[in-house]
Length: 228
Image (cartoon, rainbow, N blue to C red; front, top):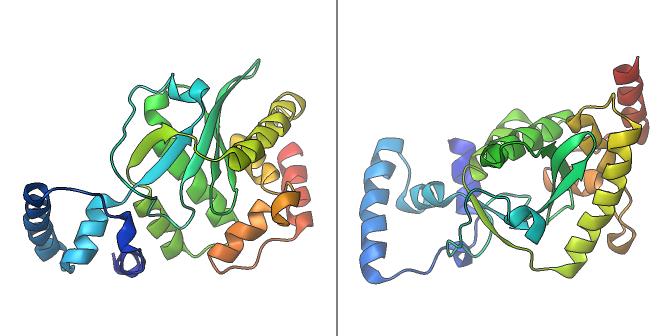
């Protein structure tokens, strides 16, 4: 909770939802009650109650989701920001490819039972951060800030273009490397150079969390371990 408090205090006020006086009064009262139980300030507790990520989906994925929310949240409360996501259908199965707005980190999860997509996304992100050597408390905080999901449409053609390139590469890897797990495929995609941004998603992500990115040969050694 201490790490979560620090994260919440650093979040901008612009992310608070717009609301009328009565609703706000209800939120304040509820926040005070929860805050007293959690030993948090009202601001910290309000942020805890509003922790959310915005997943901006392509039409193909949005049409398959069991529910869609247009809750008035201005931005995601996690370090990785909003996510872009699409649905991929291959002979190996259905998959969801998601990408973090802030660092372009690609994450691959199964596309079965999309009601479980939020949990799968959080678990896969946590596994990737752990593999990069991100401290456990920072990983736990990122998990907490992704505790709720809002689905909406994509809003940036540039980011969708990067997502489309990841989709092309992933479609090939799914067929060419059946021995690799979805985590391995995600880690592999994260080494894709993003020329327009002059970066690699893995490097940008490690920078956000203040850790040194792994060497490129680290990925090669991991693949060899899986294959052998």
